[in-house]
Length: 266
Image (cartoon, rainbow, N blue to C red; front, top):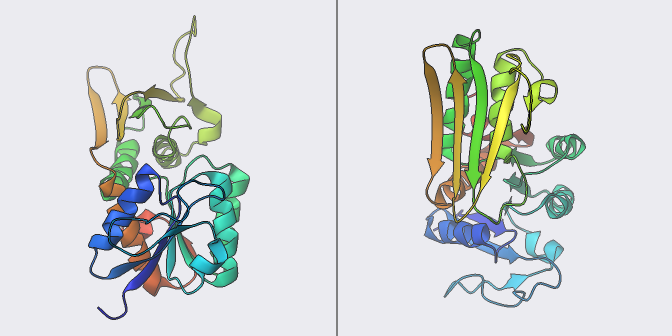
């Protein structure tokens, strides 16, 4: 098929990387153009997937040259190195990595001056619809409701709370005119006193192979509203990332998120 999007996958030997490769190989309008792993990885030189002819490499510059987009669900330090090279080579980038500092997030936004960037803590279509629902709920339930965010992930996840949980908190805080950095509570232990009604609480669960569960609770007197999203497969994140790659193929340079990709902005 002509004009297929040439996609490179970072962290290609990892759990998410393999799902991304499967999604690309199943998409008629995309082609796996390259597969990256860190320098020294034992997977370098191995096939990225059965029967697709692409070998995993640690040569970022050679692999990215000529690509349409890089999809990166790795670690902050690696992602920022990939971002700098994508900016230099004019390659769009889709970032699903979490755990960035505020300064690092600004670096990602700045790259949108030169290339197309979609940066989202969760690429799932359903999760991004949930963000919109949370915005509406927070504006309606703006008085008399305590807000708690509960998230659960697999035992291998290294950051907490999850980027998705934090983004949910940000969406709610913004809708209420609050600053999450000032009102978030990330742990409770011992005699904490009565709950401050202006706070947004976070609770984290890690165990087993949970792909990703998120619930935001609006707890009032006499009723409770809960908005929940549960992911049962990483493929939902991969399909969202491909939608982002398609979006960037026509958007031009800019810093975007999945709300832009899905037309949910405003």
